[in-house]
Image: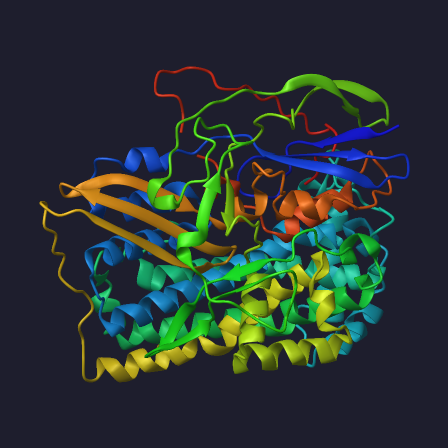
Length: 577
């Protein structure tokens, strides 16, 4: 007899997400449903406003990927009005983008996704000397792995363990789970890097603030260019960017990269992370101008996992379906014509597996009806995965020399075939590769900016709009979680319609009208869960996408109507750190 497992809330993500799976007697997931449980609505707020104000509002979609929405929204207005920004502004935007990627990816792995791979309790039994020596197997210049450093790490975590409240930030996780594969010494190495990444995170935030003014929510972009003129003309500020950039790059090369190599070595035979993907369609968009007409990331579409060909993107084929989403219009609409009118239908009464293994009364998704605030984006009626893996694969198939060299080096070092990238482990590895690609190449833009400033100091183009004309435009490109696009219609000098189609919507969307599942749901089907009361395997797969559900859900009821109520129990089934 099948059972239902509910993981709600999924923690260590941005936003509110729920996963439900139907599991057979053999512990294998037969079906899966993912629901975003809170609403956003900034698209509605944008209507009737001056287009120049929209980017500052849209970056409030999220407190993590603020710059992503700020940049794409700014580009959307520029595209609509036909504004070409100066070369200097393009390069400065790239440097700010580099700060975001180098911040986001290490934070995701260590502080959100890392404890899906690292058994913190196991690290307490590690031999510091053996761990210190082992670190050199994966890196010539390891960071934070001296014997004395590792001893201090153990002492710090041991103090948490002795606390009456337990392991503090590491409490309530599934320590000792059968699918953990690291040795105690490997766990200690990764734990040390977890703590070191907290320091690097601060440096990365400072890196963004150099040209952005602050972080989060930088403020130096305007429609037409950038305003941080005094910073890019100040040698001290440019030098500060360079020093902080190199500090973060060092961590990526000598902690993040070797830790992923270590993870591949130990987890490449773990079925739950090597299970074939449910969706093998990938889409990515060009990003990171590092020189005139030179971009670090490529555009393209890969279908059915076929790495022999890549197709150009046809933006007319992008739609959003709301058949199983809490909106009134179910029809697949192009973003220019997108609608955001709510139709919340809630959950139904049912039973799921509790933390003690018995059935408990709970609210469940009704998969025959609407069950998520996320829409279902489709490309030519097909679900697509977007994100670092898609970007790396598209660049690899395009023959991007920087990408192919990096990927082939990684495959050679780990001994896995390219086909192994089509997995949870491959998705996690690709995120690191993208971070390294940025850290290895973004200073090309830095040097080009310095050279161009010697002959050209223009940073902003004029804002010109005819209120008697109608305009449409979009800003599109790859951000840390994948392909992001903002779409605008302007009439009478103000916004008539606005839509954001974001990475986590592509990946986390529910079934569409044809019953086709998005990547989250499809990837969970066929997964073997060792212990239904500790569904770490579900968490690990979902976290590999780096969910940003604030980017996916669409406003509070302006009349004060209660849409839903939530009670969070830290011991509830599936809740972890």
